[in-house]
Length: 183
Image (cartoon, rainbow, N blue to C red; front, side, top):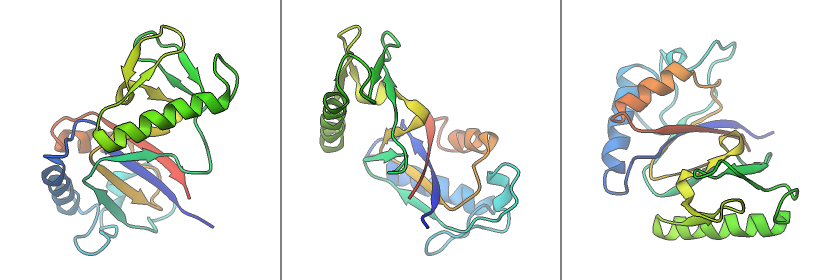
């Protein structure tokens, strides 16, 4: 059957401050009543403050990952393209473009592996030819986020944009992306 998830990925967290930011974020979520403290961080009595209009209560928990991770939209969908931060050209990932689908994905996977191992990686744009930091590329449907901190809400109704903005402020005004998917 699977489950739905949304991860709030913090792009500005570093490995050095991820644990402190994870603690700050959790304390705020608990104080607001959105989750409860304890194993798995189940939904709190005021979970509804984090979601848009919802007919169903959350069925899952919160997982916090204060480590370098590649957050993605899961196996049930793939991005069609990535957008270069220099020229806004598209690196097409579905086989219709300068590279074949296999070559494009090999380039992306190599950059992802390098980023995961080192925290830095570049991806060359097929249009302007410039290298750009992997974390600066935009991904179709916010499919990928490369970050050192993520808060994953499993089987919750969709998170509300206002909640996400407030949560980013709690994390120090950091840039965040919400990556959604299904397993």
